[in-house]
Image (cartoon, rainbow, N blue to C red; front, side, top):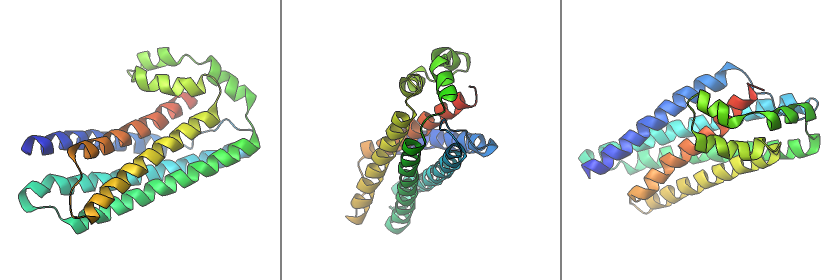
Length: 210
């Protein structure tokens, strides 16, 4: 049991580092989107809003895992744990709602072809290598951005948010049944936050370079 808690805490710390880094990055400036006209600014603002909701959700998940950490000694505080999971799920749900709106706006606006051309010409592999980034994550980003398929990228991100919401709902159902979810489910929660945030962050890094 102690090993289980230690492993989860390590994962939690890694998520916390990601949260701190991403919060500082997104706070720097509003990302420019590849859509034409005034929709570009509108979508940029919506991306910022959705990212903020996701970061707040991750913070609540961080506090939920803190409850798990102390469950071994004092027993799980089910009320506090459920409150954290409820808040985390509500924030992800809002982030997903915003991204679905982004997709609708983008479909209506159409692409800025100059911006799309730069995305297609960008050397994703080299950028990842020179900046010590995950080649695997960057390859996933490049599969969309390298083809100029921004709507596909946004749909993929929305799918990641849906997966995250499903995991949180699973944990919530377990808590309502008076039990803590299996170790694998808790690990999956941490991994999904990490992969979802990094997928979006890598795309933002590319946008600030092109």
